[in-house]
Length: 400
Image 1 (cartoon, one colour):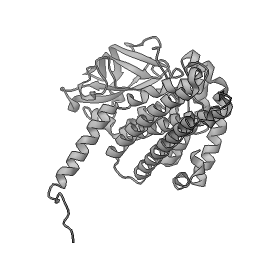
Image 2: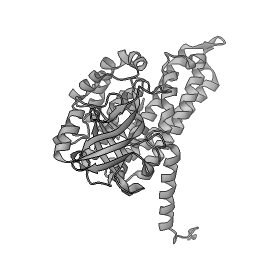
Image 3: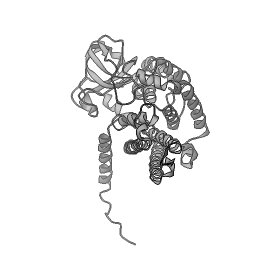
Image 4: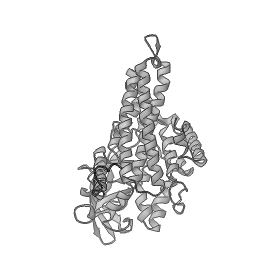
């Protein structure tokens, strides 16, 4: 749908369109036939990572020297959108865990770390996960409790992590640990290989949505990690992690818009086929107006997200705006998924229908990558600071 309007065209070039076509064919051939199987299995197979890595889809926007593929923010958006078209958001979520696990290594890691922990992942040979959230809390990163105590040439890690995407099958974990005093200034990032002594993982956690993405708890019991696996400087990990939130939240906004878009597309097909009281659902004004509202919200949400992406692509700081985009896309998708299941009626409550799955998959979007409440805190602090800088402005501009 988006490709048919002018607002879409100005963000994407012919090169982006070529990438989109290639990824769309990949999804049709390698993912769509197996979605139901992977949903029931509760995981995405390693073979899919390998295929995606060989085609370069995992390496888009990563440095060539790390084995990546040259591209811009919109190349990443194209891949993200087309992967979502499989109708199971757990699959792109699973394929994309490296996009939150690798950036600190790329930005602050050593050459040796990049060769060992970045290149094999974007080639599809290893899986990487990010571990920040703990059983005691997720949004308050500065209060994490997992400790790493240095002893000679290694760290001894103790603690646990919760709700870790791809935690079951990850080969390596970019893990936030406490190496110093309380608060943000005492956090470091370690690369913990999952065959390390003292590391263990739970059974797969059963979730409301994202079934095709395995999720687990991680446990560290005197886990031994070499000092050379420290990313950047000790006690700088909190700030390294904050650097990547713009891109993580943009990615989630893109996925959330795709949830809404697919739901609307499914509804447009369904209302032409389904009849009530002797005529198709599309013949009822209440249905047509619901579709109009859905389309209007999606158009605004998608345009806002693309505009923020364009500014990020131009190198502008968009912390406030990307936080707004994440929250706004979630508000829209909450409404659209509700309306879509309502239009489908009893079928919207049945397994086997895309709108039912997307209704479930959508619920995590307001929680993961920073809750809606945390987004509002970020937005409010920034706009208050902006207001303070303008406090000498008159409340009402004088008439000329």
